[in-house]
Image 1 (cartoon, helix red, strand yellow):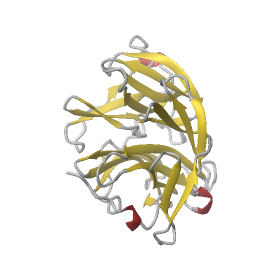
Image 2 (image 1 turned 180 degrees about the vertical axis):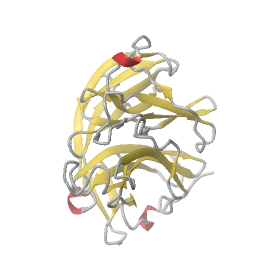
Image 3 (image 1 turned 45 degrees about the vertical axis):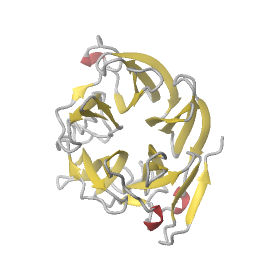
Length: 317
């Protein structure tokens, strides 16, 4: 079953819009049998005044009409399971990677040093099992000696069968580890300062998208180890009031070979104000958006006025 998506029917790049009490961030999307399964961090300011974060899911067949977001992780500030990186297949199972982002004290805004990486498994993309720890620093590193780790992303290496990569943020840097079984991992080093890594294949190269201070950074590599700069995507954030504070967390779903779509889809989040702005921009006023491309360099989106005229930008090398 294939979806036929009419991108000209989109009236806005916005998918889910944040407000005074909610924020949507860190999107990832899995496509199967004509359905887009979107997973994202949903943060909200509860009646007790505290901020809670969960991972939630929505589905669509046309990228316009989305089902209501429903949480797949518990409401628990000691966990805050969030920042879903992506989904890969392991046999009959779907494997989703994500993080814990503990804020156990009322005054905690950002996740503490107990933030770790995890995977969850599913057979149907709807019901997910218990989180399992991703020991990306090595199988013998005990919990209490692990670094603060966030923003995982899993890659199945097409060139080396049976090899998996995990990209993540550690000490301000995007690092990676490799595994042959998704259980025993070996650190491989770092490649950029930033967060929210996403790695996809483009011809004979790999493309890394990541989040520097603002915008979506782009790097390219032929071996997944040595990377060169390939631009910074800002899209139309200067003219989007919902994304002027910060554009971030780019994730590409490459469906350029998928009949009826034939595009690479870029999902991201935008903040109305910078994260340290007293008006919001962290636990509220953060929204999910989307753009698309034929070549991963020129990006298109609907004009905010609702016209079907497309605007575009290029990621300059």
